Structures are given as structure tokens and as C-alpha cells.
Length: 116
Picture 1 (tube, rainbow, N blue to C red):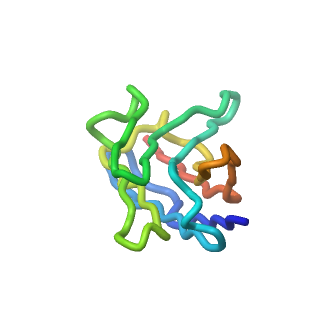
Picture 2: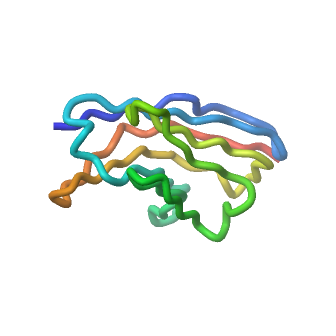
């Protein structure tokens, strides 16, 4: 019902910035929460940032003050602005969406690599 496609990943030096995008299609009006998760090598998947249909946001403690999540007015594109990147931010970042019926949807993921 919902298709998510991430883009914007890549290789960046520590201290640099990247902006990830997630394009949603399908039954996008059924979505009430979108967010970003990441999974680093040898680590469990963790929540990075969430944004609700009302605009409220939530961030992992490790990225507070550095990352910012947002959505466009049409609510079909979500962004993750990542500043002051650290090597420990290296991970596969995945876009996720949840609808009002508690169904979850995932994108394929985009690799972010931060070098020292």
C-alpha cells in the first residue's frame, strides 16, 4: 500500500553533512508517522528520528542537536538533515512509515559512511 524510496546516502568526512530523502507513494494519506532507522555494522537497528502527521518529532539521544527530520507540505517526502557527522553515524539508513492501522512499511535503505 505504501512504497518508500530513500536517497542521499554516500561517503562524507567527519564533521560534514548529508541530507537524506524518502519519497512515499501509494496510500500516503493513511500514514500518521514516518521516520528513520539505522543499522550499523555489528549493531542492532535503532530509531534515529520520527515525525508524526501533526509535525511532532522525536530523536535518539545520540543525534539530538545534529540531525533534523522534516516533511514537505504534501507529506509525500521526508528528509533527514544530518550535520556534524561522526564515524559512529556510519550505517544503513532506512525510511519507515506507519499507518493508522499500525501497519509498517520500509524502504530499501541507503548507505551512509562517515570517515575520520
